[in-house]
Length: 523
Image (cartoon, rainbow, N blue to C red; front, side, top):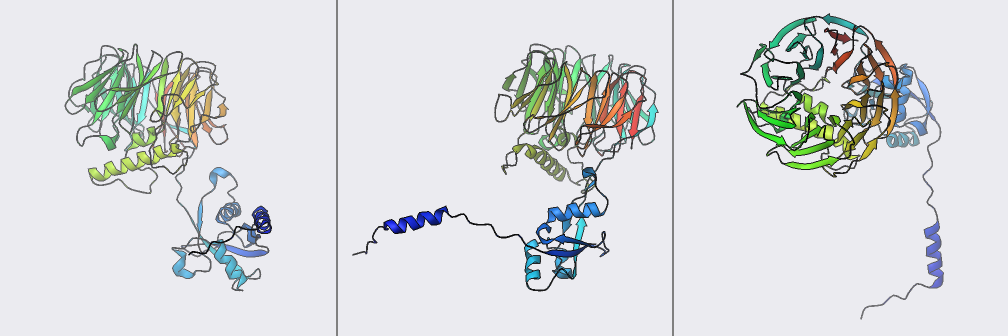
């Protein structure tokens, strides 16, 4: 027969309750100081002077801040991230072991290190892709006979800029030399939009003549005749993301004032299907990386379509007036596909490797918006800008209700963009203002004041630290998004600036407007 333990006595219960109430005191912080000398992990050269620091402050984060200060990098935007290595691990450990405060404290306790000796801490600056603010106009190029209405840099080579104009032509410019490369003639109306394919191998243009044309940007020649089907002018063009394309069969979507969006087989030169559902002009189209197409129209709605068969998945109703513009949190990654302008990795050699890299970059960009939950689910966020002076932030994959409403503009919101890292939103309005918002929850951050006319377009630098804006007041302005302050004022255009784009490698900004000149800006 099993022995049954007696129930605890009243005294035992009281003692157990008292122990449970006792707070466990945290381990004491190390006391004392240590002399340290930062050294380059590769060359062994000293980095800054010898300093004495508290043992409690010997953490990688504090060491990084201290080293940046010793090297006179006091501006937070100029600081470099560092990796520190085990100062007691010997040469073999330097390459593999990260800095460990616990190991160092054990060495001090054992007498292998002390405040009287100088401890050499190897460090290595991690590579950082940084874009410098543009400060000057490097080229003012004439050629167009009417206003320049759109501009976009190639994702593959930022020395090429495409522009569309009211003179019924599109042009490709060599921004290295500041000279025209090709004049693309064929449209019989204004060229309202230009869009490079994600691999940079094709250029699409849409015009007031209701046609879409595809061009070989190297030869400057049309690839076949115009793509016809729309009844009115083309308002927006979006290419199918590279990682979801069928190999050798790129597609694009064109939105039109006729109320439809057409999906084109570029190689077969035919319409795959048309998206019909809007009751007025379709003002903007975006093609997402998860197989959805997003459209906005003058019927006050945003529609979400399934890209394979063209079925309407959701209709997002919240705006009280025309929806002017859409932006996706993954726009930058989808635009540049497998191209890596940080210099860390080259271009993959095979098509399969390119598709895989493009998918990885898309998933990394979409993953920013998971809120750090650790989930593997990729979530594209969408923002819509309207004539009702508001914007809405959406997460269409999870809900048809907006995440939040963004209020603050006093007039129509004309243009909105996500930062490449997916953390910020910038909106441009006819109230002469630019506003910055948190892309996670729509929290208002800054109002960027400086323009004295409506702001038509804005563009982030590739490192998400800077923003450029073009306005009716004839100027471009560069803003520091960390502080919300004006960094550079760039006069030069002789009339209003309709189009502006920052190259993916961060080297140049291209702009155009009513003065018919393309201007290229550099740092």
